[in-house]
Image (cartoon, rainbow, N blue to C red; front, top):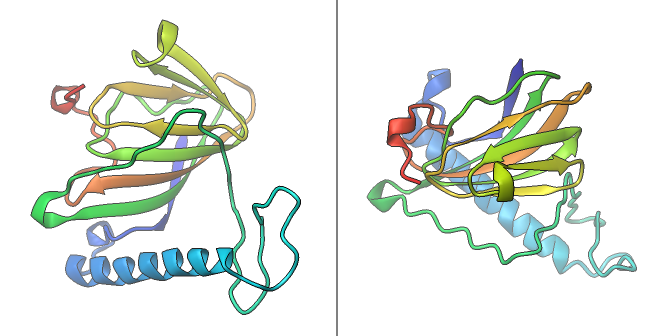
Length: 181
């Protein structure tokens, strides 16, 4: 079984809300989040951590890193939403042992961190078609290519995921005929 909880999304149509009002509110929330995180990095309160990257900051602006992962290659996130714009959705996904996401693709990009367990990721983009992401690993998925994630372990896999998807497109496209990769 796969469970997903949305942390913040301008996609409020699913909950019966007004899409335009929800998109504006979510856009403002995202801007406040970006400003708060940026200001937290400029905070003069407290000593910086030995690594030079604080994991938490002090008042009056507080930020706590919830999940972190590392990419060894450059990361470029660019999603063209045209006139409609781009939606950003933060989601926690839990995949129970033996379950998987099913084969799908995305119209935009996905950035995730594995916070618990190990995700077996099947995609032609990996050497041999498979890669296992462990707790603490980050995942970058581009647009258009079919892939799927499976929990082949005996404990839950928990992912914290940020989707950057053109407005009006699904977070995951399951009709593989619509996958362009």
